[in-house]
Length: 280
Image 1: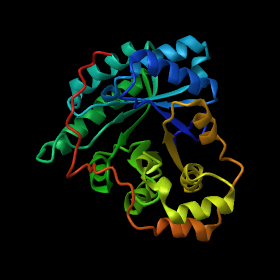
Image 2: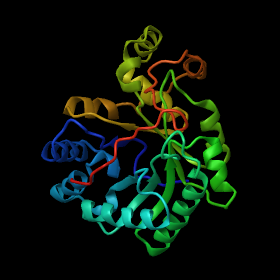
Image 3: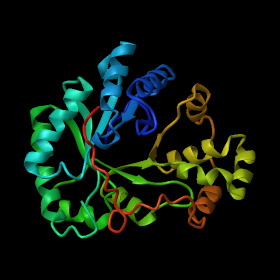
Image 4: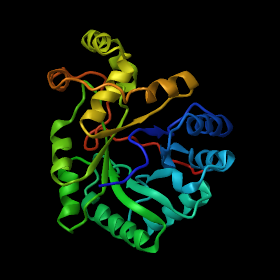
């Protein structure tokens, strides 16, 4: 299992922000107590994260930094080169967690099995070199992970789109059975679940906002939410969730909600195609 300094992560996907704006948002997140930061070459915020860490002067060992290699960076040589570009942009000697961002490069990608295996070999070697502490996957479903397992490659963590209305029970259960930590991107369903009437009723019961309830739900399922926010009050609100425990029946009811707030992205059928230009 991955050891992190806290149970709530901060997501650095800030596409509408300039590099300077992104840096200030991350600085604010650090000042609000966030200690796990999730970025990616695709996000083009690695420089901002590195600058924010340096600007706050916080001890490096107090921060967990995760990044991901993009679909055009996979393969043995590609993964190694991508990691060192990431370290350069971050201005760090190592990162805590390195993930393969997507299992396939396109819907018609027929070489994903071999390429992911080669990528994982490179990542294991990077771990031996000490420049990566943990390696894992993002958006990998059970059949994607199973290919890695055939080569005795077990991810430490798998990041998935997870939130009330999109719980991906099969993928989560598979990861739990394999002792793979699960993280949730888009834990609020890109805001779509915030107007849900059932969740609104539950939020009143527990004296929390719907957004807070979504995060509490994931935490009680041993899933780390990766949250995003730019306003200080929202950053603090997202962290004010550790004083409430939901009843099992309410968790089961959320488990059974109809699909709500799905991003529209799927690792086998609808894959993002924008390529990072690395001009961070």
